[in-house]
Image 1: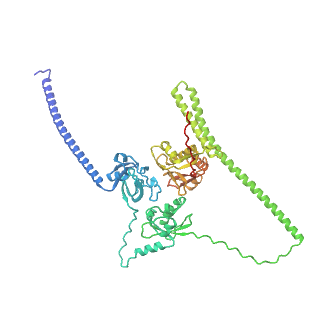
Image 2 (image 1 turned 180 degrees about the vertical axis):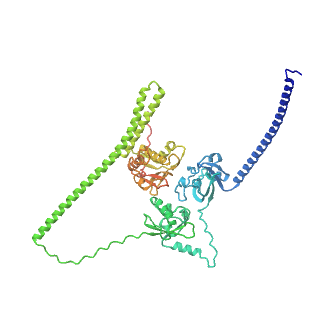
Image 3 (image 1 turned 90 degrees about the horizontal axis):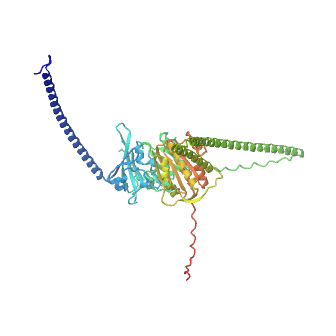
Length: 593
């Protein structure tokens, strides 16, 4: 043993070596235990994954075996699951279907009467807002077979762990005809039950138009008088919105509000709905029917003609003397002179008022133009000034030149809008197909809308010709879409549709689900430079109005607070010219050389 002083280094080294050996043995034991635990955990994880895959496979097999089309969408409305029945009904394979939105124009979704269903009223859209929709019926076309089907859709929201909506699920069933909800069985009583056939005969025999609607305003029953007055089919109206069927377009919003108010009013105190077609619908709540209403439509009584008053008996008139006649003639001349003076003064007042209004409009127009052109010229002059100072930096010169060019283009667009609103613009009118023009604009319109806006563009495949200025048409559509996008503040849904009105005119509508406008804002919406948003020019609807007027059509705007806005251009079609007989042609043989 080697000793140095009082420290036995051999003993110290031996103790250290023994400790190291013990630590190494414990490390080997711990490593073996952790390795065994890791292998056990890995085996359990693999077993759980196998069980999960098996359960998912069995669940998919069960869902595929269900003969009902089942689909699931995410919060953005895109399909993330569809069973085999859904693939067959929707005419798309799994790879083609997943990622599409439920309101895609692929399926041509319409009401049973052929009217397009707005995207925000589809069952999946309502389910994403937290509503449960049962038995919503609409027409859709299978893209593979091109067969149109009447389907019934039931949709429900998918709720997350904290109660937020994270998606929707829907069941789609093809039906043979419109389905009407079965009435609940009446409670048993000692009295004899009423004959339903007799009740139905009395309902149909009534001389007034009778319609029963449910709590959502959908038609449950309509008698023969109501159907005949509006040329409707009994099977085609059940389950559809009352306002869409029996009220004019400009009265539907007010009619729906009247129905909602009638449910909270006392019996007999609800305000009636007076239509432009001459019907007055009186509203009566049905007790025990959970919000159902009975509407009775009667012809609005015309005011009685005024009966002419009987002539008063003639009384002898005394003949005035010459002096009295002269005095009366003088008074008459004075009264006539005073009346002429009053008329001249009133004409002067009207002229002054008209001139003041013109000056006010010119002042507002001049102020708006001066403000916008001042901003554009400021950008251009600043960019050109920097351009001259940075001539030795090509990249910076290119960027500043681009800014000046964009400002110039904005000024050019502003000038074009002002010219479109003026009376004396020289337009280049051509006979063009509106459907082709709208489809060609789709990429640019989607770029304008942005990724967060769900934009749907629908245009029929058949020709829809009108005499228009193509540049003005492009500017009007862009202006309406720009208004809708700004109303949504970058997030929401917009539908651009081109279809035919019942009167045979072309209708291009842009509808958004934004906050809408009240009556005061709606009344001034078409005024130039009127806007409720900071930084906006206020020329969008003015430009669309000028284009509609230039093309011989009109612009209609329908909006209500909380219900979005729909702006529509109504344009006249090109009248079909009578077919001219083909000119007679004669064949001549070439002369021999």
